[in-house]
Image (cartoon, rainbow, N blue to C red):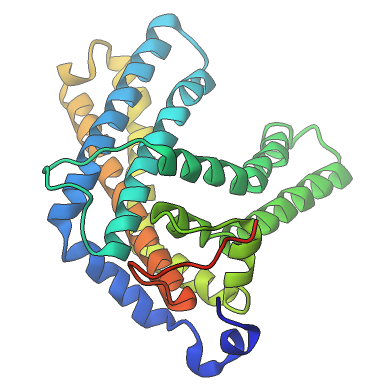
Length: 282
């Protein structure tokens, strides 16, 4: 593990723009690999979304029930792809010669666990935010201000945790010893650069992903009012196509983000395939 003098050495700083360019190169020069790793997670996510949507419509459940049905599966399928892409970005090869790859094992379970723990502050920020949005007219100015501050503090804490513990994810993916304390030390002195690398790299694809998501949400009420199955009318078919395109861009967004983080991890820790790691610090 590098010491503090190495971390603070200006000549050893994480190159932001070079890392971003390289992350795009990893993804767009290997779109065949991307499809092999993302195809089944995308299809499964799309299928789960359609099943949960039909169940909610048929049983007239509240919309939030659909989220409860979808989210565990979305997280699982996203994790399977994220781990596989971390491994490809860091090892330079896939785990199988089969065209489609899909694996759920101990490293995917650990990755999912760490993701859930690190996401707690950001998920917690939704509580005061939703209270503020839903009750804005009834709340006093002081209460609204406190809720806003609580949400901002939770978001700030969540971003710090996400950046400082981010090296856990590539480490888990390549089965390298890791932990919260070790990841915190390894990102010391590089937090802002890791933030800018991942944030700036994800903007272009993230914007397209968000626009497609908003278009899908805007079309859904109109398609529902038309009745019948979504494939029974032109607008419904367009919506399904938009939804599928949005999922593809969601996984492209993940691939860019994972590539950028993997490169940052490799730069800061000097990790290399086959290199013996020192014992993890819990």
